[in-house]
Image (spheres, rainbow, N blue to C red):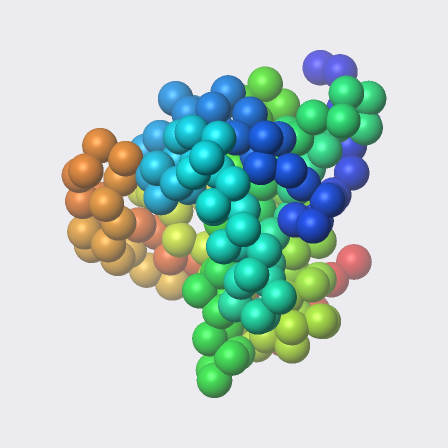
Length: 183
């Protein structure tokens, strides 16, 4: 398997066209797990609105957006958002996907590492959580690799892209656990 040279980029450096291209290229790959992102980016015009809303959320500290960018082609190859931020109890959620053609190269794992550093050290969160489909074993492996603990199964918690309610697996990582395992 060949390696990919890539870097993490931030939302202010990403165009709506680039994001639309990433989402459109991966629509079959993400349709069940990212229905809101897909619905809000299924045309260039909608992607422009989605990016504008997210840029505003970042300015207001309501969400933060990271992108993986192939350094050779300059194309976007991944997306990670820090969302569901609750400053009152100091917790936030991570949501992410990698371009189907670039899976298995450690990109998601490195993006999650960077997002954890950002969440715990810049946002001063006490807990980061990941909610994933019961059948999304790749995402579960990413959570476990980063020392998240499975805290439970939330029944009928998520409406997927097919409109079906499905269970999600809830993983949590406390700052004290992160500091213990930080390399």
